Length: 278
Ligand SMILES: N[C@@H](CCC[C@H](N)C(=O)O)C(=O)O
Image (tube, rainbow, N blue to C red; front, top):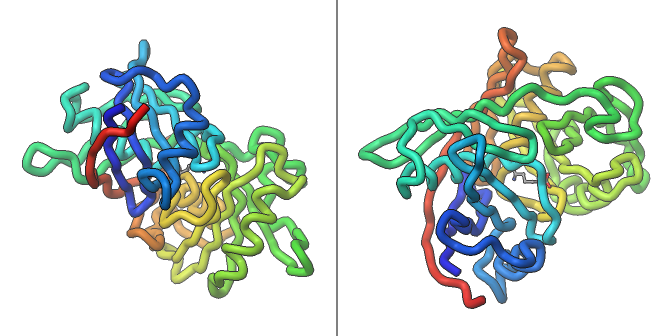
């Protein structure tokens, strides 16, 4: 099976072009195998680029534990780059099908190759039962939650996949690596959750670390950065445009007052390609 390793702000996945390769018989198992950083290719998960009847291509994304995510912001920019650079479509604005419907991606092209992309991530989902969470409020905003004796205030948002955002004065390993996995599996989140820790630097700039559902700490999460931007605006911390500094690079976010959609701009890069024995 031919594969391509790509990364967006350091959030790295193994991409399989299912226009040319057979759709894997057991994608969950394959994702666990290829993602292994010691015995596999090494990645945060696996993304399948598939034909679509309604769009230029369809993305299916699997975390490194084999679970399937509805959406992946960094992954979608890389899918867009792959689709354009490998000639699947030469449209400079692509329609890509995801678990949350069809999203539009504008490509930023230099010397014939995509190096950045701007994704219309759609409207944030703010109803607790749709996020989903049993925490109170639509959206659940600044809700107190005690984890292992630590008092937290969480704000929840879905960008097609669920996010729990926590604003802190400083981000620590304890929060990300110890509280993150406990929050991911907390009973308040029936489909588990991605957890974003945010240090606000100004009304338009912040630092973020993330504990991702199904993959653990990653260097960046696009949907998470969108969710954190929305949470920061809802709680009065941010203006409408935010630059988010993640461990693997920066993302630019904008929650539009005009159409209520969130726009995310960031890098996409191909790292290497190879063959995986099947
Ligand atoms: N890294 C991604 C999100 C991947 C899916 C997530 N772990 C989930 O299960 O919801 C991004 O860039 O958005």
